[in-house]
Figure 1: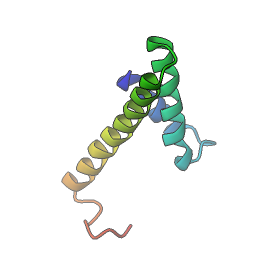
Figure 2 (figure 1 turned 45 degrees about the vertical axis):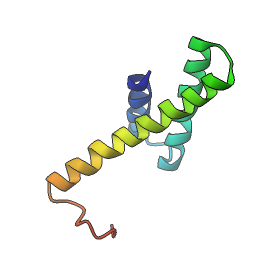
Figure 3 (figure 1 turned 90 degrees about the vertical axis):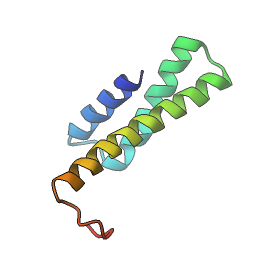
Figure 4 (figure 1 turned 180 degrees about the vertical axis):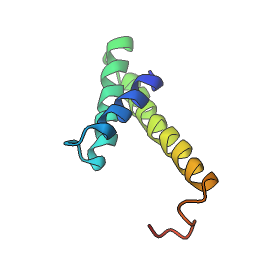
Length: 80
């Protein structure tokens, strides 16, 4: 499930007409839909979907920011 969310985010990021701010919402919606299909429409499914979407975005940022730091990009001062 997490891999599907990560791939969905990657595809959305590469789609020119999709604004960056909307990707996290779409990934979360995909995660919620998938967990509801797998576990049934319950409150637990909703929570699991939100957590899965959040972890996929967090994981992507973790890899991306670590890669930037290793490559000497970003400066670490909070300015872009």
